[in-house]
Length: 347
Image (cartoon, rainbow, N blue to C red; front, side, top):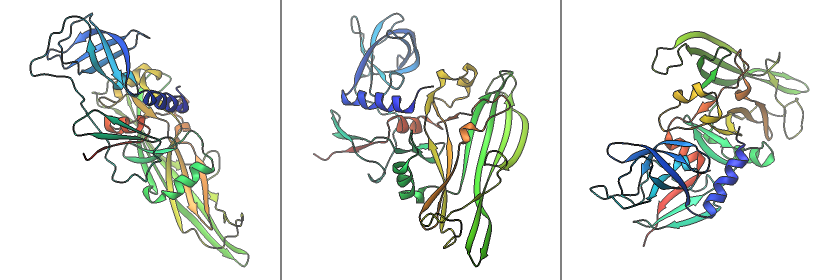
C-alpha cells in the first residue's frame, strides 16, 4: 500500500519542478487519434486512454513523451518522435477536463503559486496536508496523523461535517468474489443523566451495512443480496461512550453537549493496481484511486472531545479491509492535487 506521506511528497516534489516528462511507447490508438494506450519506458506500466495533446497522429510502436504534474496516469501525450503528421483541425495546447471550484481560499493554506502560459493567464494555487478533500460527496480531512493540529483544524471546520455519512465500498471475499457494501454511519446521544454531582451523557453510534455480491465479478450483472445488518459502530462489546467535560476532564459534565459532528478522515489513498485485480472493473470511469476511511466523532462539551473508530478496519468475513473509490475524476483530481485551486488572473 502506498503511504499517503509518500504520495504527498511526490506531489510536492513534482510541482516544485513544474511539468514533468517521461518517455513511453504507443501500444494502441483510437481511430480519431484523440486518445491512446501507452506503456511507460521507466517501469513498463500501461496507461489506457491517455489524452493525445501532441497535435499529431499516432502509430503503434511510436515513441512519445508523457507530460504530467502529479502522476503519469493523470498526464497527457505532449510530444511525438519522428516526422510530424498533424491531425486535421489542429491540436496541442492545454486542456482541462475536470476541476474543483472553490469560492474561498480559507479552506487551505497556500504553499505554492505557479504562473502557467495560458490564455487567459491562470494562477494555480497548491495546498498541503492536512487538507480537506471530497470523497463520494463527503467532506473529508486528509491527514496521515491524528494529533492536536489535525483535531484543531477539524474543529475549526465542524460546520461542514454532518452527523451521518454514507459510503459505497468494495472488497473481495475468500472465494475471490467481489462484494459491494453500502455503509451508513450515524450518531446520537443515547442517554442523559443528572445527579447532585453533575450531568452525564452517553454517545452511541450505529452502522448499517447492506451487502451485495457479484458471483461472476462482472459489474454489469445484477448483484445478489447478501445481508442488511445494523449494529453499534464501536468495536468489541462497548455499545456507547461516556462523554467527558473536556475542560475539567471529568464525566460529571458542567453542561450537556452543545455540538456534535461526524468527521470523515483518510490517512491513505491507494491505486487500484495495488488491490485485488478483480476490483479494478468496479471503479467508476476514469477513477484510479480509492480512500481508506476513518470515522471520528467530535463533540463540544466545555471544549472539543473525540470518540474515534476506523471504518476501513471494519472487515468482512474474509477479514479484508473495505476500500472506497472516488465518485468521479473531478473528486480524484482535486484530492490528488492535495487541495488546489485554479483562478483567472486579470491583465
